[in-house]
Length: 160
Image 1 (spheres, rainbow, N blue to C red):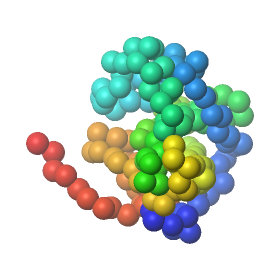
Image 2 (cartoon, one colour):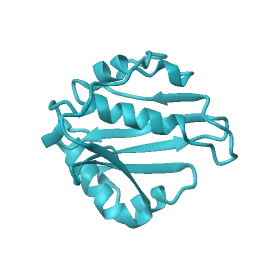
Image 3 (spheres, rainbow, N blue to C red):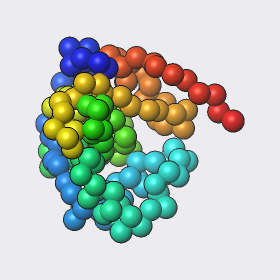
């Protein structure tokens, strides 16, 4: 997305959905949530990271992480990374299995994208582009959710 107006909001969540920003002190929780999200998909990624490695990641000035909560219960998380040039990447976006396919994905991505548009880069530059990356190893509904929110495919890379 190159403008906030390109965001197509999802339907309202079936229950209250909030974002809670967290930092390095939440590394063990973020690690546990990450593993629960990606383990069923067979996608390793950061699953092998230690709590210390997660704490290092979460303490980077350009990295911003929010837990998604549904009526107080952890439902997933999003990690945004703000580059000096104004680009913000939705680096990690995922819901726990018990919240998937229940109407939370669209509203969560809407909140995450709005949050990305409101970030400033470490240099203070406002957001000029929000991007994300997906893979065929992600949840089967991920790409459809991204497209429905207004994201457009910029590039595809065939698997080796």
